[in-house]
Amino acid sequence: MPTEAPGARRPAARAEARPESHRYQDVLAVVAVTIGIAALILGWIPATHFPGAVLGVIGLPLALYSQMISATTNERWLNVVGMVAAFVGGAFALSHGGFSI
Image 1 (cartoon, rainbow, N blue to C red):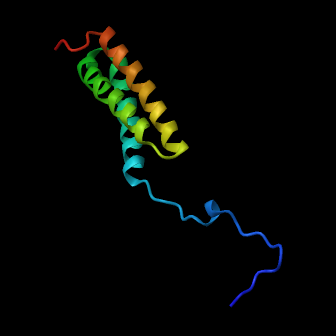
Image 2 (image 1 turned 90 degrees about the vertical axis):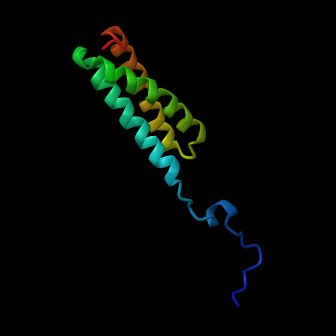
Image 3 (image 1 turned 180 degrees about the horizontal axis):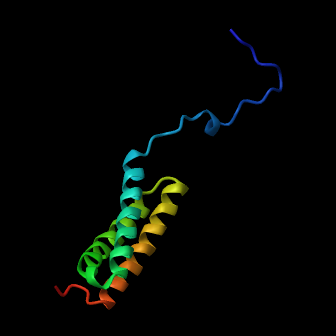
């Protein structure tokens, strides 16, 4: 049995913790940023204003929900990028005609 030297410090409990997998949050963050960028691209093109508006309306609440349950800083960065892209893409789409077919 190993014995500790007198006065030796044990590592903090945080250092002993194993990294947890946040697969659901990771996938949701990637989906949010993908939909946001797609909304931005489609909203920018006047001929594709309808799909851009739909993706903007789907992407913004999805990114907000993903932000609410995110666990790491990397997920939060992706969520913010997805939120901004979905909002701006949806705004471009609405300015080009929005939900009119």
